[in-house]
Length: 230
Length: 356
Image (cartoon, rainbow over all chains, first blue to last red):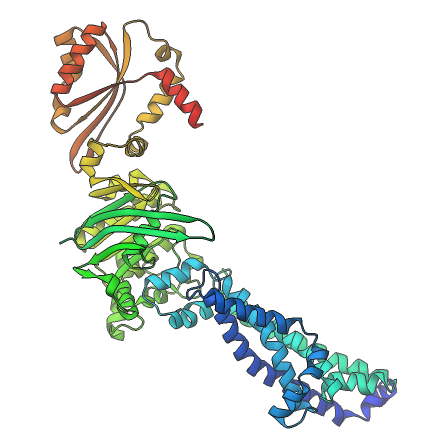
């Protein structure tokens, strides 16, 4: 077995610690970004729904501004965002290169993406249910937590899966500013040194990560969905 | 003082360049224990009007007074408190899909001082009341439409409200389920003494549940009063049309106008609609017409129903008599409080083809 691997994956076998390191970096970037970006994105998504047309705290001028900001940040290609906000990153983290520094542009890229996903998920909550909660005397934040987030949970979970998966592809790009991770390994080592087995194994590891997230997400979404399940 | 008093309510919606008046100058007094029906076609402003009662819709002008309190002066917190004490049921039930039946009924009690013990008892009592024992742990998706509306009713009663508003609550249900839900509402009105404000486009619903009715058209109340007053003496054409949907007179006329015999009556034959209330129902009209005037009359269609225990009759009869006799008959019947109107099938046909 060992000789088989050494034969087909010669470079990988000498780089096991690097793979371990890169996997940890990818997981670190993904989950820290998901946590920070997720909370802020969720909050902005909720604000978009509350203040948007027909929202329970309708405020069209606030909504329009927020909506434009979200569109603006979603329009910036990530690779350019990395470069453009480097000075800002330096202020926050102290450096513009490295894994932790990567989290700043990642968070900024994920927030508008996730906010839009959350907005769409919550707009799918039946407005009649929201109205009935108002008729039962719920406050605005009561409706957010007890109605929107609870009724919209299965769709939010599905949106979160989509966001996490695209976040993983962003972490791969972050390798270009010495962010590390599996993407960095695949490109900087595998591709540029013509060590194809390194690229291949990096890909397999990323795919495993994506599939695991997808499967867990599907199970959670199914468990929380009482509307379509019989 | 009425329990709910709406005074000169206006609701105006401003869209970009046009202003639409959903409710115009509506004044209604709803007494404690009433089952007040508000009937009208869709777009008449009924839903907007009832939403004014708990300020789901703020009126553009006018006053809402509930239990002698002007609710326009209420703070947000007071409005929320008021809403907890007014049950609201909807056409599409609006149950929370992510909560079990039990949790749906518990929802309105969130943030109230009701103890956990009391909450549990209340849920059990309400589930018994609406007849859904054993369904406590089910989710709404697992129930039928009628069962969902029962849950919605139980939920609306969770805080022991004195007022229950029903917004087309039976419109999405089949006729049999509709009757069952109306019986339940009747029980809540009679046994628990809850005031019911019910909006519908079906006069049948009003007839079987309400003691008072208001008819709405394009934002205005065109007629209101006790069920008996309105059914026995409707003043507007709209109200008459609504009432006709409950007694099949219109269908009878339609059927007759499709039959040659009735369309081409011989010279002395005429079709009449007789409409009478209460004591008049006891007069043997057909016999009278023959004995007093020698007129032979034939009942083509008849319907007698009881509104608040008072008989209300609608007959279509064919009378064979001279014009002068018909005149005498009209005077005689008027003295007996029986309304006689001529039915001209040709005109009915024209009217129908226009509507169609």
